[in-house]
Image (cartoon, helix red, strand yellow):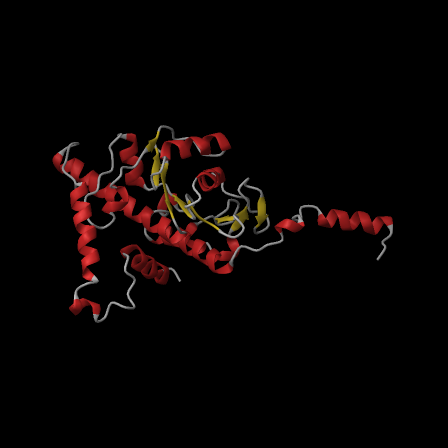
Length: 277
């Protein structure tokens, strides 16, 4: 089919900004829904509420395409509590916009997500918040130690502190975070906020909730018993893990355990996702 020159120019103008054919792929709807739920859960749990209502973002990486889906920047009402799947943006690992609502860009710190995903192929979910107790302890250079069974294992190997509060907006800064993080599942940007990761966005979200809970307990222990307060030991963490595994061998508990998620984090995700549905 032929067009007059004027029509051709018009078509070219209309096509500007369209994605190349290799990008004509959609982010999986079920995974996009989980990313939206994760952002709303951060608001529901108080990790992104009050003066921090617009601060933070959860993302997921599609294992098939490598594309990353996350909350963007540029909404009329920018609140994690309101995020729905259609509000999210999708980018490739170079932060090139693949799809998203008109006028909405990737978040300012998209390089935080892309650089971690590039370096850590086992990670498929990342969460960043400005959780206040974690931020406070990072400025005080107070390590977050495991204080109870609920989330204690998630910090048992230590939580590194990145020595800057700047926005992670470039490849170089993202790579510096990756280097400081090492193989740890989480890191805290000093005076800025924590980053947690997981094999899924669900796991990364629950790890963020766990991290801030452990931070609060550390703060309380710091106040009561001083900087060198006691904490759970590696032996305590291992003993608890073994006791959980033993539950599956007890015949009086096996009667009704077949349909229950075995991991506490999985149960928490089901609970919170129901609350924000």
